[in-house]
Image (cartoon, rainbow, N blue to C red):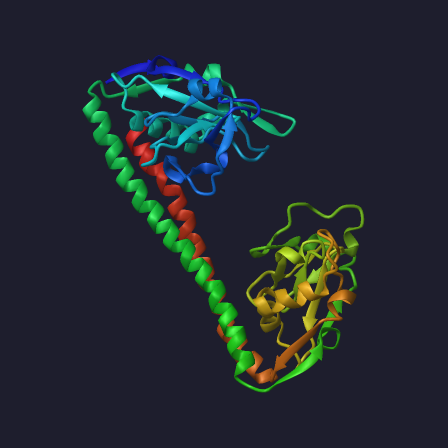
Length: 384
């Protein structure tokens, strides 16, 4: 084994900035949005640009170059991701975008893939995050300190290649499993949509104005607000709120089992939540709309999934007036119309829908565990 600084393993590195488009057409610019997990670059959705010829000649990417996310992100999004440039079976020309550095390894002493996985390990293990500064919400990698970090590696390049190849196979399997789990998660959404659609087809329906089918929760929780967690509505459903109540905490609305609530400024993008029977009751912002189905008329769980289904989306869109940030308060939602199946049909569908929540929780846990595996695999290879 030998130990060298990163800068001593590089032929060169550059800042990645290239300025304004100018002369040479047909150049593809790789940005941080092209970085995928496991050090992989995505070539999807790229548009060729016209770039200054001098910049292209200086910064044209070659197979084996390493792309480093040097700047960007936000306060809670560390930079430092890396990816190996593998090229494509075309004559297309690629360069790094602004905020991305190109690292050119000394191939006579370090295998490019091995070096990329070392740098990927630095990122996922938190090493890179310690070498960052944040200004005006933008994170920047302290390149001098980054390049001075020591790397312990096998002297024999063939050993480096074997270690990198083994990691590539293992990480590819993890990524394949993660994608399969995410597909399962998407399938649960399709299952809930299908359950709603089938319940409507299964029996005769009656048109009803939403204002006549739902009861709005208007009264605040009062002085007992500290006894309850603050809940929010996201595109994924129920979630802890990011902020504690402010001045008028007593106005926060109670949301207990059977309550559907949503952010009236974000309902158009699906920020809707439901408090199920096994969820802890809480409170939510007085700016949110909270409601329940009228007893014996609308099953609240059934309505929640209806509201998040294509049928509910169409209803919401029909009530929107075109503003991107308009408020969909209850009086506006009340103008909408719903085709209601018989109540017992709703209840039967609701019971089936109740099984989706634990199913999603299990898949979510599986995804979380898979997302931790790359760090474990990299740690087994590089931790000393």
